[in-house]
Amino acid sequence: MVRKMRLDKQGGGALEMVDYGKRRLLTCADSLRELAKSLDGEFCSPGRDREGILLERGQWENRQALRENLQEMAQVMTRVASEAFRVRPMEERKRRLVCHFLKAEGILARNLFYIERAEQRTSIGLTMSLPKGGTMKSEDVAALLSVVLNKRLVMSVASPDLVDEAERSFVLTQEAPFVVMTGAARAVKENEDSSGDNYAFIESDCGKFTMLLSDGTGSGEKAGRDSGRILDLMEKMIEAEFDLESAVNLVNSAVLAQGREQGLSTLDICSLDLFEGSCEFHKVGAAASFVKRDYLVEQIDSHCLPLGVFQSVEPEIISCELMDGDYIIMMTDGVLDALGQKHYEAAMKSMIAKMQEQNPKEMAKKLLQFVLRASGGRVLDDMTILVLGLWEHGNSL
Image (cartoon, rainbow, N blue to C red; front, side, top):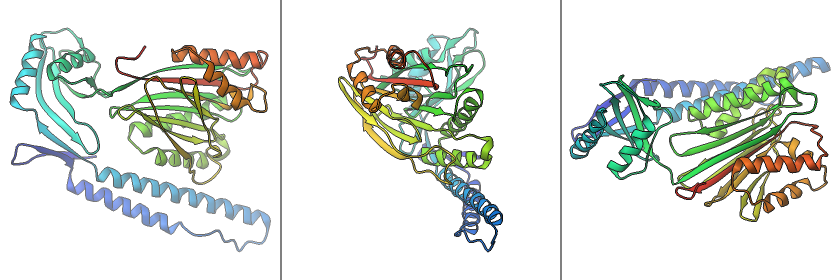
């Protein structure tokens, strides 16, 4: 992707895609849409024998999966082409103050500017180095600049961890008012060496925190590979700022394309906005999740089938407003099934409501112990429990 800086007469600036590159992306998007249209159409087979009809049906389903893929890619290209960043230099007085303050710490700072992106908060960019040698953690520099600029600032996820002799670029972003802490507990199915469940936590610069949990069909190494591939793809797409619905459908298409080689896997997503204190659940064949607020517990579930069953998936999106001290608990179906009760979700809900632990890791371990006691110590399926606690800054553990 080619981008350029263009300064205007007022001394501000715009960091935007080169017009030529933007037009090319939009043209490619239109071409993909036209190609997708050419693959559209209802299934109609002139074949008379069952084998021929099944073959033609499979080919038609592959075309429809490709059509969905092309439409998703066209949508992503259009969104990227419309992106623009505003860049303006830092005020001279403030620039001198920052440079002087950092110089006292032995840090040479240059090229200070603000980065403004549509629908996101302003960030600060600069280059830094330690000309006289040594190293300093970039997070410590962020803490120093928070004092100087009277703003709670943190280093972006993509910024280097250390400031050293080499001059490097850094970006500081506004610190979100909420902070999270996570914990996990898991048990591997009896007679298996590895779990078929996989999970991931992803933090982004725009105040988003995402929990991912996938349960591969069956158990053991193959199930673990299947769910691991799902999470690898989702992580890359989230880091590339795909919207979740597009990412889920593209992953679903990838599962369909691999056929029997890729087993069916569930996908459980919880995306938190740490500025707004809210979250969204996207569930694809996943077990129930729970939101705990003191002794009140809300159950979050849906009835969508796992990835790879249909050409496209439309996971039910459930939104929740969160408060300081709330907890989110996600788990695979092996956990709930192990309770061995008719109303096992109600039993789990009751257990979560009674818990008084505050540390997410301790909560996850206690829930797993509760399930193992209920199952008589038997582990008949992989079990994974994720717990996330949300606090306002200053109130965290």
